[in-house]
Image 1 (cartoon, rainbow, N blue to C red):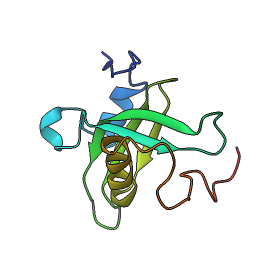
Image 2 (image 1 turned 30 degrees about the vertical axis):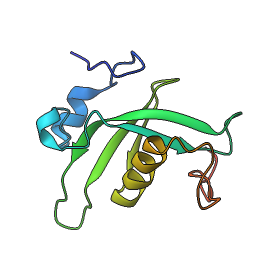
Image 3 (image 1 turned 180 degrees about the vertical axis):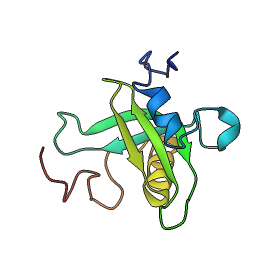
Length: 111
């Protein structure tokens, strides 16, 4: 059974992710269901809205992560705490461009 997000997309491989420790229940973390905004220089308009659909807590040396799902294409990405805060702040402030001028895909390698 998949989980539909704001964009109507289901979380792919949800069962596999749950076996890795991901939780998709709203009770797992207050950020689940919150709206996000990310900025990618590789996108035409650079603004990609989404929402938090999952959370995995810190485990030993592995940091806590939040699963962000893009509204436009259903793509999933893992966010660290600082990326989560930036994405939540950008959405709530209705930012049209990165406040600090840095895109979220700066420094990322093309696959």
